[in-house]
Structure formats: C-alpha cells, structure tokens
Amino acid sequence: MKKSSIKSLVYGLTVAIAAAGMLIGCANSASAPVELESIDTLLEADPIIKETEDEVLADDTSNENEPEKEYKEVNGTGYVGDYKYILEGAEENGPDYDRGWFLETADGTNECIIVICSGKKSTGGYSIKIVDMDYEENDDLVTITVNEASPEGATVTDAFTWPTCYIYFSARPKNVKVVNTDGDELTYQGGYQEEFVDGKDHIAVFIAGAGEISQKTYVYKTDDGRYRYVNVTAVTESWGSTKWKETLKGSGVVDTKEEIVEVAKMHNSCGTVMYTGEFTPIDLSELESGGTIEVPLVDIYSLYHTAEDFLNSDY
Image (tube, rainbow, N blue to C red; front, top):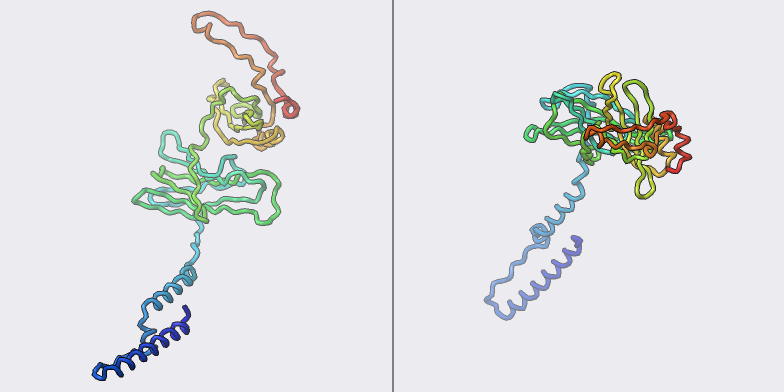
C-alpha cells in the first residue's frame, strides 16, 4: 500500500474518532477529551510499514555487492594440505571416457593420478583446466576446481575430441571432490586404465602395432543394431611373451560401421581387422583327462581383413 493511501486512511480514521469524541463530549461534559496523535507520529510508529520497506530493500540489494569468485593460477607443483601435487598437463584429445574423474594408483605405493574428463565433444576448441584447489582438514577432503571452456564461435577442427587434464598426488587423499567453475560436481567414474578382459563376445577387433605394444578396438553389436566399441592398449608381460595385458582406454556406442572405423583411426588401431566368428573354439576337456586333441591348421593370413572389408561385411 502506498504511503499516500495510508495517510488518507489514517486521516479518515482521525476525523471519525474526533467526531465520535465530540459527540461523547456533548453527551457527557465530565468525560475527558480524547487525545489524538498526529498523523506523522502514527506513520513513524507503524512497525508493519517499516518492516515491509526493510524487506524490500534487502531483496533489492542482496546480490548487488556479492563479488564473483576469482580463481588464481595454480602452480605446476606445490602442496594442498599435506599432499604434494604435480600438474601433469592437459590435452584436447584425451582418452574417450565419459565426463567425470578417474583415479589411478601406483603399484606398491600410495601415490595416485587423478584424470578429469569433460567427455565427448563434437568439435575441437574445447578445454579443461585445473584453476583452484582447497583442503578441508576435518574431512581430509581435497576439492579440485576445473574450468571447462568451449570454443565460442572460434574456428575449430571438425572432429570429435575428449578434453582431459591430469594431476599427480604424492599420497591418495581420503576424500576427493571435483567441481567446475559453475558449481557443477563431476562424478567419480572409477579406476583409470583398468585391466580389460574381452569376453570373446565381440564381432570383430581392429589391431595395429608391433613388438610389445599394440592398440586394439573391440567391436560389439548391440540389441538395437548399433555398435559398441572398447579401445584398449595391449602390452606383453615381457619381450617375446605370449601373455598380454590389455588396459582399458575408452568405450562408447555409435550408430554406423563408418563411425567405428573413425574411432579406430583416432585410437591408432585401424590396421587389420579380425572377425571373432572365424575362430573355431578348441575343446580342451580331453587334455584334462590325459587325452590328446587335434588342432586344425588354418592360414592365419586369411583371418586378416581391412577396414574396407569391415565396411562391406554383413556384421
């Protein structure tokens, strides 16, 4: 209610009360006269009006003077709490992991590397960078703040990218939280570079490399007719060993075989293609009872196909 309207209302009440007082005075000359406060005194003493004005003022100025948080440049190495850290850099095209953060611990030590991913982007020009770190001693909590930047109209490469950054800690904090500068928390996704077991249910595998290291892309057919891929790095236990350890590097689902070939090219596994259906499983049960088995001879080179063969196949 406007102040002028309140004045009119109070003025009307004042006149009414004064008239009532005059009538009472006429009826009983011994009655004490009614003492009326001035209009200005009534307005100043009204607590409801004053409270309402204070609340409106508070609403109007609540965010005016609140400064935006400024993030300092994080040094390449230093300490957060008692934990020594080293920034291990960032890359526009990291492992094709989902958006979130991953943890890798060093064998036999308490050291760890935290890998923070922005997820799949449709073009280049995106980036992720660590801009702040805080430590809460009571919870042994390290909070890492990252800035996820977009190209914003700049000329960029027309290819999928996976912005990623890395940070090393001399010891693993009990609790870790990763947020971006907008306050969104990135989800913990599990271990980084976990060992992968193929399961033999893939339809094909792309392989490239030589010696002790090779890159592979396993291809699976989904129930809805799409293609799931799993990229791994395969390393032999020792030179000449037939035992390989395969480490997960990324996975996803695409719609076409053409996209699978592009994924394999990006992972550097687009060399030869081998179809799982061309391998004949060998029954080893006879060996367990001391018997012998016959292993069919195959022309191993006939099992190698090209990416073009894969595109033209029925898979």
